[in-house]
Length: 249
Length: 91
Image (cartoon, rainbow over all chains, first blue to last red; front, side):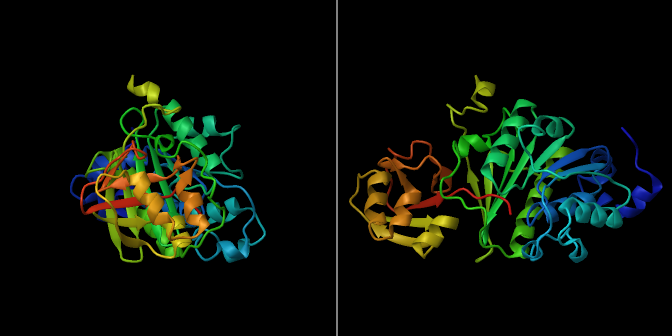
């Protein structure tokens, strides 16, 4: 494991003193790779927190060009990036913010062709994609490769975070066995709410990797920004789950 | 028997509210109680909740803080809180 440099110790000084995290936790992050699927309203602030926390490498998959309607919440984007690939803005912002981390951008969303390879390169996967086809693919690949997956989602003023550990917790397919017929790609969102959900997801991932605190395994963290409530819901694995049931035989 | 229902995300948007108390006969299944409740709402609410006379496979049912797998057959106790969670994604 690559030890922390003197600059690392200076940058992360304030979090090195977090009880239970310390230099050991920081060293784990420094040597970890995270994959983030989509870097928009949810994945953007999530990725920003992973960069700030000092992950060694971030792989970010997000296709398409930046639009005006992205700018109310996609905080890694830049106004001068309008009309250009989102990955350009993402890379510029992250490199200016923390040049000590390695950033690999993929100008494409997660799909059948790239999912296996991208998940293989990661120690942990964060899912912030808007389409269930992508989410199910990430879940399937994470389970297949026994990689932890932090699933983050939101709608309007509500959000949910589910830490998924293959063979230990229910997977996304256990909860939602098919593509929800009523889900629409565009939905109401204020950037501060997506950032709130993103921060919870980042924290659960950091705690899982570094082994401190209590990760909400087997639970859905349900957040409601209207009344600022947070509910932890015990979730169950589906015995007939097509993705993960074989791990429990 | 009194039950508190909590609607989330798309279901709350379709119903125009996120919480309601509903009175029903004791001993009825959650499915039957919810069907009676849903009659008070627009078709969209029913579309989200049900599929082929059962709860939709993509509706997560939470009773008193715990997910219920046998959602079509579960019986409730007095003063239960039922939360319907519709799927969400990133954005």
